[in-house]
Length: 246
Image 1 (cartoon, rainbow, N blue to C red):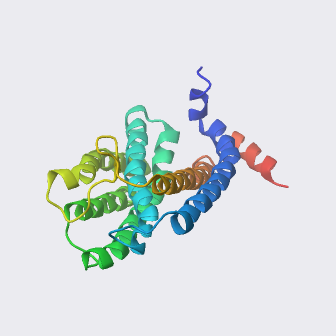
Image 2: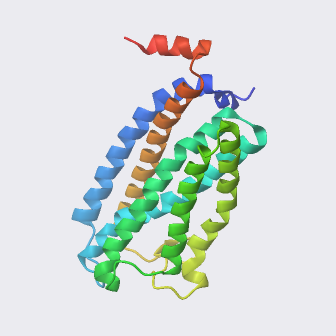
């Protein structure tokens, strides 16, 4: 068996996640300190937006993560739906709250940035509206999982919604291109190039790595807890839990 595929088993993934999450948590702290240091002390004041633009060092990575986590969650949900793999379903369940958190951070930080920039906390802009739809999808995926007496039916209904919701991701990404929106276009993209100073790009990438490492760390902790709940009573889990006690 492929060494990587071996870890699709909850019994092998559980101890692996226990070893990995502290590393990602530490990396998140380091990258966050670097990113915040650049954002507040090294990055110059924006010529048009002034100091308020600095909130974008959190807003942009949070928006990226809310979409990326949804994609990964939907892929795991699809694997669990088609292949009936236990770990895939648990990973999808573990990722949903983190994706919801980043979606909320993106909306709140965007509103704080929008008030002095646009003159209003909120508009029903195409980008903002599609981001709200993403939050509703996260909530729906999480709610459907516990909406049925039969846990398996809840998991399959949740997976279906997660897969259908993938159509919203390109709407979010291309909304500033497809429609005339108030939201500004991308300052960092493959097609449009880099429209930011190098030091700003460095800070943005550092904060993005911090968010990635944080998302991985908390998801690993959460999936370990889910595995312990689902596999309680099994011989391997009893042995691992006994070995973890001092």
